[in-house]
Image (cartoon, rainbow, N blue to C red; front, side, top):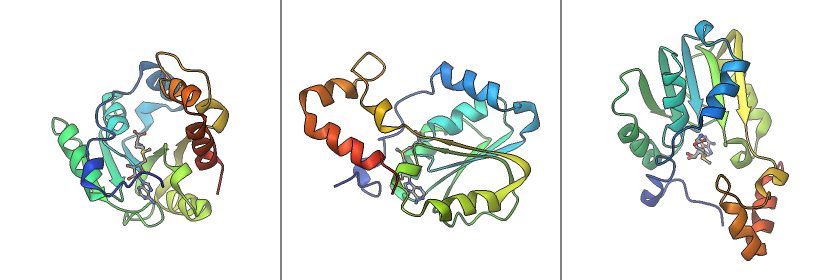
Length: 174
Ligand SMILES: C[S@@+](CC[C@H](N)C(=O)[O-])C[C@H]1O[C@@H](n2cnc3c(N)ncnc32)[C@H](O)[C@@H]1O
């Protein structure tokens, strides 16, 4: 069984970390941030990357998630940011108007998505012409790297190989 994103217990699951500087550096190389006035973070979790986008200088950031519980955690986590807002929506049907955003981010989302094409279609619908669509996720090989300070899951997989198998299966495209 996968994680139940809708449980009250999931509220703080994705709020406790901060985006790593290496993520911000890579994003800065991929995107001319000065050209981006607004961004949407779909499957935003606790808003860690919504915050990072705002910190990079994007004027307005919207986080979308299909879990009300997770959205509550995100609002709490980002309460000091006036330029970040959160809305309920599904990656297949965000409820956002067409051609509304310069940048769409979907981080650690697509391995949860059954209808990848439906998700891509929605992202393209809400993206403005010449906008940027960033999808980031881990491959099975990446997840199964040996444990280290930045990848503590690797230690769990070493001691509980059954978990590694589960992880691999959930990362293989549906
Ligand atoms: C692994 S978390 C990633 C959170 C955040 N993007 C990050 O990188 O920290 C996946 C998030 O996607 C959300 N999610 C999963 N399926 C979704 C869907 N179909 N539509 C919208 N959100 C979804 C979950 O509620 C969860 O918050």
